[in-house]
Amino acid sequence: MRVHLYGNQLMLRAVTVFAFALFCIISFGHVEPAFGKDDGVTSIFSPLAQPAQEIKETSVLVLAVCTVIFIVVAGLLVYGLIRFRHRAGDEASEPPQVYGSNQIELAWTVLPILIVFVLILVTSRTIADIQNRKPPPGAVQATVVGHQWWWEIRYPELGIVTANELHVPASTGNSHQPTFLKLQSADVAHSFWVPQLAGKTDLIPNKENRMWIEPTIPGTYLGNCAEYCGTQHARMLIRVVVHPPDEFDRWAREQQQSAPIATTAVEGQKAFFANSCVNCHTIRGTSAQGKFGPDLTHLMNRETLGAGAVTNTPDNLRLWVRDPQKFKVGCLMPNMQLTDQEVNQIAAYLQTLK
Ligand code: CUA
Image (cartoon, rainbow, N blue to C red; front, side, top):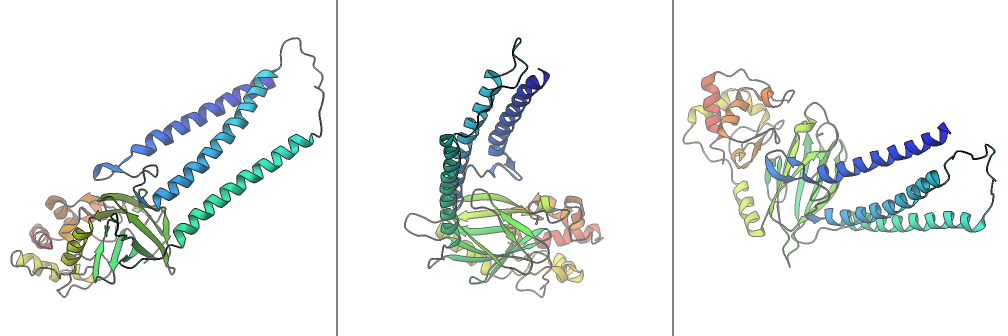
């Protein structure tokens, strides 16, 4: 008797846990605000671009089929547990054993095969659609290089190098302008993931992966590195800024310019070049040509510092220059032990990099 009751309770417990998990996934997975933007949604359930939409449609279909199977199986199980549970006065002997029903055995063999076959077809069609997409004329080409813990972004055809914010044009009604990305890594494995735009693709050392995105709605889309890559993996955020096409062209022209020549903050410029900043950072149009850290040529156009660690405000910039470890413990930019005066001067110089 105890055994039968236990089975019943276990089932109930399993159903409760499943329902709670489903509730959590649906409610919290949907509205998680991402850093720096209260309305920043990083949910795979609200895609706003290809291929994320196509992936979502496939996943909803798979999820629906699996849910129906789960409800049928769990329903039959619960029905069996309740209907045939042990009752007072039942005989203690084994119930009659039934073997070999051709119909039932055929049904539970053929039906799952058909279901799996349909799911394979739908999934492979989606994968092929996404992977075989060729860049149309006018597509933007960008290379994204994962570093511990920031993103280097290059547009070889446009001659632009930037960091942590990928700017792309939106596709409008009759002009398709997708962005094709080459993904590389400078150190360990990372993963590029902006849930509303596309699925994850890893950035692997010594291997080049590819992906593409085609957003249609201008705005800022948030994402993270999605492959554990060390201490500051959680602060390796990526922003994709989608512009209307003409605005993108304007952005590109601005980025192609070298850094403006400092007319103010000349002291800061001297301090920047006197310290070892130049060993790691490039400022185009100057002798700073370091490659280890982010290109700073147009630093002031970026919304955040340290790949999303903090918003790019004058105060945060000063604090960052004084000691980056304060915002991002373990990041590869050390505390340079600058004096207060040097910190203020260098921060003032960096603010001229518009
Ligand atoms: Cu880069 Cu995790």
